[in-house]
Length: 326
Ligand SMILES: Nc1ncnc2c1ncn2[C@@H]1O[C@H](COP(=O)(O)OP(=O)(O)O)[C@@H](O)[C@H]1O
Ligand SMILES: [Mg+2]
Image 1 (cartoon, rainbow, N blue to C red):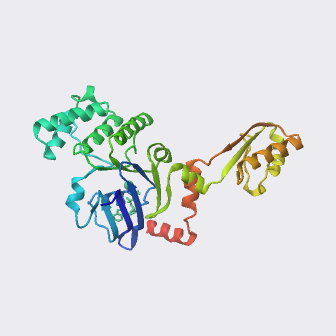
Image 2: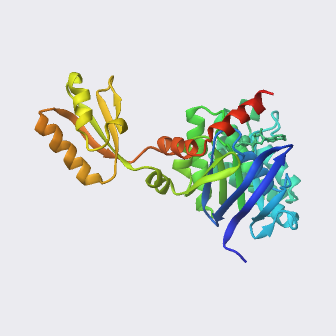
Image 3: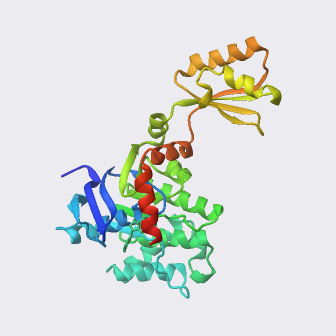
């Protein structure tokens, strides 16, 4: 008996001569929300489909809710829920009827299916609109109904494959709230996303995936701390003195990013407080006035770019592009 809800070791999946998964490792603790963050084509959906027993992997160990997806697929299926990028709702039926239907499909009795539908509608803020035909739902409402449908069977582990792709900001916010409410219920959630902000907001831990492998993993803060060194940002009052100020920062001149339009200098620093003090001192000594000086952690965007950039081997990139074009 393991305490991990998901355990993946060295998973490989090949399509022709192409590796969709190239030795992927993943561990997700029970009752946590884990973000699988990566660009298009990274292998997120392939991973989810393997975990959900919809696709067989070529190599590696894959266990979900304590069971092997290959040899105990039935046991796994009994314990999971899946929200795909496109879910099958009946447009003409109301939200409640859709949920009831899903319940019946999953062998809940008529009464149980009805109460479960009501519970879920309530939980996802759809209580008032349960009778409305789904075709009249907004994008955010539909996705919440999808979520509710994937929870009919009270899964131990829920897979959400890009749950907010295609939604407007409002719909995205609604779905975020719904996902957060799942965590309270003790469900383990594996969420794939291309959005750094989404992973940052929802996930307890994040695995960054690129080309079928995990290139980094940890909490959002750990990832930021790993790649990045903190940064010092300086807004110089007099644009004419920007270059002079850049040369005075306590890092190599080449490492200073200059944004002339915003009169902003930004530089990675190793020793936070000492660098801040040195910056203030050097600018003061030169009589250069700063409007603002701030220490900050790198953004997740900066982290992501650096993590995936580190993986790029120029020759492999070139052959890949050719492969896509062919
Ligand atoms: N059925 C398939 N046949 C061939 N190649 C596939 C198939 N499914 C996925 N791939 C390839 O595997 C890689 C990973 O795809 P996918 O898991 O869908 O990525 P993501 O979900 O992260 O966008 C991509 O390069 C994709 O083109
Ligand atoms: Mg995908």
